[in-house]
Image (tube, rainbow, N blue to C red; front, side, top):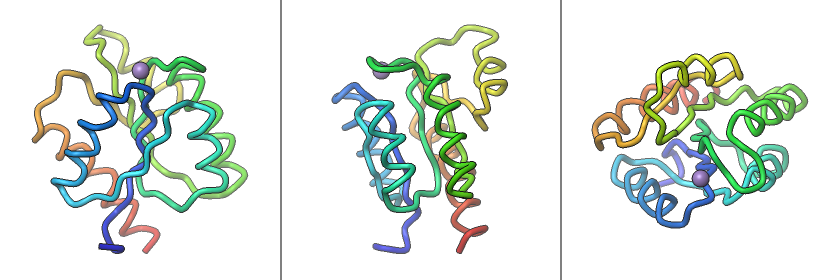
Length: 133
Ligand code: MN
């Protein structure tokens, strides 16, 4: 149980939180939820180490781009460079580029299939878990 990779889910929508939690559990990941951008920054600085951060595009207190920028500052301080994958409902062309230039590592566009979700989370989280032991 404890050797499962952990994913920090930054998401302000309770329904979305439950869905992502279910999927992570199904595919063998621990799930830590941050319900706001501020809470996620707090957890990044003082919480347990995670292997991947799934970042909502739009939240009440700050958007995913702003949160990612601040998250990278925290990571700079802690020296833990955890991948950040944006999760967004927008299927707009150009969003991926926006995500990447904001310092995100990848992009998961809603609606996604369970296997798309698994593929993306696996690719990033397991890689981090292997690298950092
Ligand atoms: Mn949201």
